Image 1 (cartoon, one colour):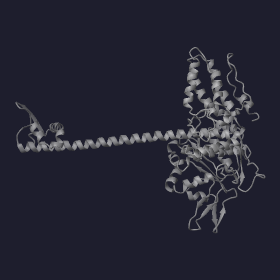
Image 2 (tube, helix red, strand yellow; image 1 turned 45 degrees about the vertical axis):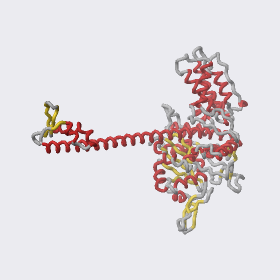
Image 3 (tube, one colour; image 1 turned 120 degrees about the vertical axis):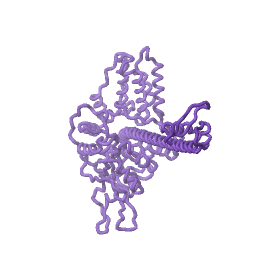
Image 4 (spheres, helix red, strand yellow; image 1 turned 90 degrees about the vertical axis):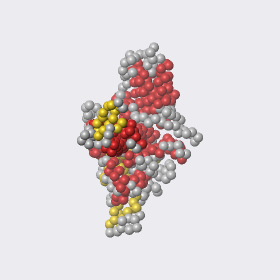
Length: 552
């Protein structure tokens, strides 16, 4: 990418290398993608800094070497990076610090531990007979995060604009991509790599606690990147989605406007959940149909109520705020395929600087001209072979039942994201770099979704613990009531016996007067009667005897 590597070098110079380090110089011809190269160089610079720090001091040699090994393996794990597992090991081995207290044996151990952490690292593309390996879901490192935003002018612009306005750059990016797609003519679609053509329609979930800035991210994205007028609606019922596009005028179906496009906004996922619970038979399926561009609406018997939106003749994008503890309505619908259709992006920004940067001037985006691209079946975006091969291999694994349910639509979502990045860049094509950058976004999304799942698991565990404690309390309460009832019966039997006999009685005689089920409570009954002053005790030659108190 012209100018990219020069920009990276100007903005992020690694620490000076010690004199005893042999630099690893990379060239464009080494086959490593510029983004990957920037992330790799940043990780190796951490090792260089570690070498000039005395062992036992921060940053720790053990921790840094292990973390860098994990991150290099993660990069090698991405087939589009052009970086291999062997290169990762050679780089780590060449740049890892060495000391009598940190020798080759310890470097080998850190590498082995990293391999265990990052399962499947550096895997080749699976053949038809190879099972897909499991891969640990890890978030982006700071170096990878920075390199992503530096990859393109538009990405850096959105990042800096978001930071200036004190909102999450990832949230602003997600909203901006949804707005760009919503402003793209509905005729533009993805080619039929698997099955038939696919829609660009995009769903974005902004994940964070209440008040984390979902609404602010939408406003900032609109200010940072001008895409023209968009029709924005909230999501009502499933039937109401179709009404966002068409209406009946004197019995005739008409489009609401010429764009056939709506950006649906859901401030809190709870409102979507409420609709899903009440009218789940219509809302969730309609949203899933909207993501794939299928027909919307229902064939009511009453023609005056019938609104059918033809497939692939509309544009539908959705931005929803998602509180982690209330995301169950999406994740519980995994079998239906709803959560897989979302990009899960953070509405928080843990790395926000103390002082906000200067706000850049807004950018104006216009849809690329269609020219002669229009044909039967719409305007089809060209897709690079790297993306096509990956999608086909993934589809084969899916057909063989080797994919997790939550990853069923992962590559189609990634392809939509790559196409949105290409359109943001002013073209109707998906390049290797678009696919690579979309994979970075997909990794971010997977990591955020995994954290949401962990939050829900922790919440469910807490609920189960509360239920168990409540049940135990109830059981204790019941047991106490049963025991109290038995003691009361024993008290009544003892007093009746003493009243009937009219003379002091031994404890043995009184115990035998009780029913077998109550004899175990005799001592407690005697203690209660003595404390209440209902009976009295006397000690004589035959031991302790009990009689009714004088007041009895």
